[in-house]
Image (cartoon, rainbow, N blue to C red; front, side, top):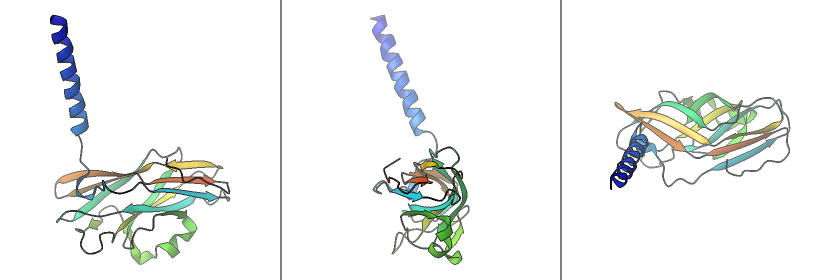
Length: 184
């Protein structure tokens, strides 16, 4: 009988620890998108010197009645050497694409971009995809495949902080003429 009580208490204790670990930290909040499909982008670039890219596949939609203020953006599981050089909010709709940095001025004219840190996303009205996230990436200047599994957006409304993750993946095949857009 004593052995069963110990097993039950250990099981209840472990369940309590698991619940606590999952409930800690900021929730996804009103900019979460549980119905968004996972976007997967692949880009082959033969020139290894062309190592800068823009990644635009995350629509920023605020499903609340209060504005949301962006704090930071991080990459989910980036390959070694992949890093963010700039994060901006575009007033253009989401293009759902990964593109070479040399095309950035044509895709995102300067007036359409503002720095993401401190940018305000108003409540969604009318066209809910009025804003999108544009991430400027750099990868090493060496032949290889570089990936990002998604992005995390940290933001707040008043004193409440949130963290929304988006499974928008990117695969860059540098020094190659082919590249798979398979999920990362």
